[in-house]
Amino acid sequence: MNWELIFTITNNWALLMWLILAFAPRREIVMKGVFYGGVSLLALTYALIVIPLMTGMIEGGSNDGSFSSLAGVQALLSSDGGATIGWIHFLAFDLFVGMWVARNADQYGFARWIQVPILFFVLMLGPLGLVLYLLLRFTRHNKVADAVVPQ
Picture 1: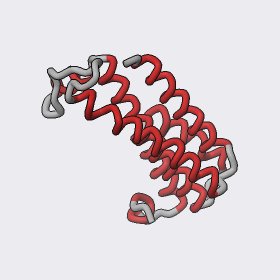
Picture 2: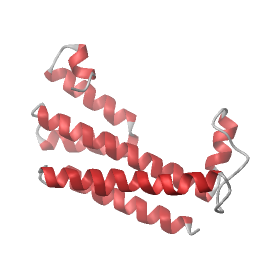
Picture 3: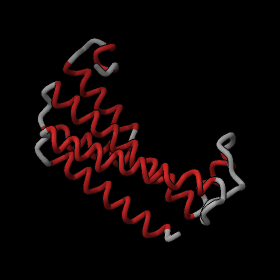
């Protein structure tokens, strides 16, 4: 498989979805497009590749690894296929979290100029961006449960 091509296509597609999420009007059709065209398509790409890759049905994976040790995870991610599929995993979940942050921030009335830097941190640093948003949300609603638990 051409892992570089798969990486480039999925990476650029995810970036396009992030730009739409950050700057396009948050109409229902736009959000559905980001969800189904972005998150779901990335997740489907991951699903269609991960099992054949891990079982050796397609070239590019590593059969030396497992999820039970650091060395095993390093072995899984050390191949071109493993690194690509790991990246697609990040892209799908970070975009999903970014959608949740954007919708929730809209619900709580945060201006877009405040949301965009938070979304950038979700894109680049995943959990750190989520923590920053939860802290920001806590400033608007000072109950811990309201600041952490999605509604």
